[in-house]
Amino acid sequence: MDYLASEKRYETMKYNRCGKSGLKLPAISLGLWHNFGGVDVFENGRAIVRRAFDLGITHFDLANNYGPPPGSAEENFGTILKKDFKPYRDELIISTKAGWGMWPGPYGDWGSKKYLIASLDQSLKRMGLDYVDIFYHHRPDPETPLEETMSALDQILRSGKALYVGISQYKPEETKKAVEVLKQMGHHLLIHQPRYNMFDRWIEDGLTDVLENEGAGAIVFSPLAQGLLTDKYLNGIPEGSRASKPWGFLKPEGITQDKLSKVKKLNELAARRNQSLAQMAIAWLLRKPVITSALIGASKVEQIEDAVKTLDNLNFNDDELKEIESILS
Image 1: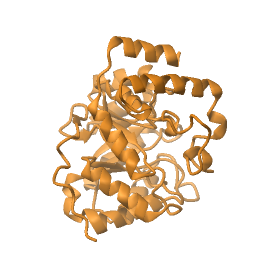
Image 2: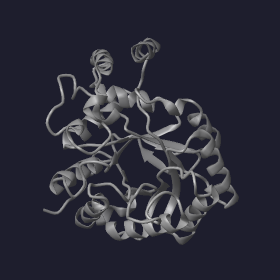
Image 3: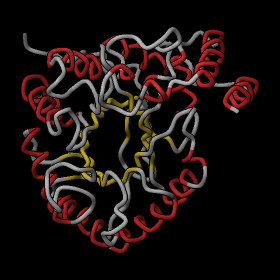
Image 4: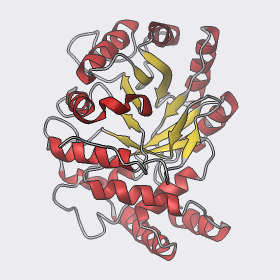
């Protein structure tokens, strides 16, 4: 059956300007880190992407190594694009990244110009695209000169294979240097993609200030701490959850009693706000103007629908914020 996008797809989504740029991103974006690879059920991922777009999610985030196996998420997304989204390409923001290990040998990892440009060429072939909207360097490389890595992004922009560039997981000082090098090349750093959630707040120690000062936006990944900031693990580790799988960063040993105690208290506060815990955790992130978008994952359509309902209640009063800080401390 041919896919026809909902005519109401732009009625309820909130779109935020990404730093000092002309680009707006949906407050909720969809990442294809998990559940869209070759080990997963293709039609389930396809249904998630379709529903996301019907709800106004226009931004889909990938990386060369997403799967597993590496590359398969891009291949599957390329199939979805071909089958369902060809008429809608100009309504979509598609991003990919390179910086983690992708193929054997010295040229398939980190931040050399050789690796980044070759990787993007492969990503474009897998997705069947002429260009991506955003291309990221996925992590800083301590051995490759920053000027070389940024010159790769410069070449990618000038070639038209990406419209904007970003970085991920760069610390504050590294980000400042990347911004300056790109400026010297005539480019603006559009966006930074850091990990950020109630349990992982490192970006508050300088990075958000740098991004605000430099006019770059932030799209935060793992906003729900790999599912820990939901009601999923309150009664153990359910079958099929991220913590039950051999890949991914949420391990059973990371679900401590201390964290579960905090999750239960946060869940009670969310209920008083007439939200799910996941919705409150996303709203808490989006309260900061520098956070352009929360990058969520999903294993089922209902999780997309639940996340988008976050937009019904984005405001916190001072007492709620104090209570959250008290719980987290």
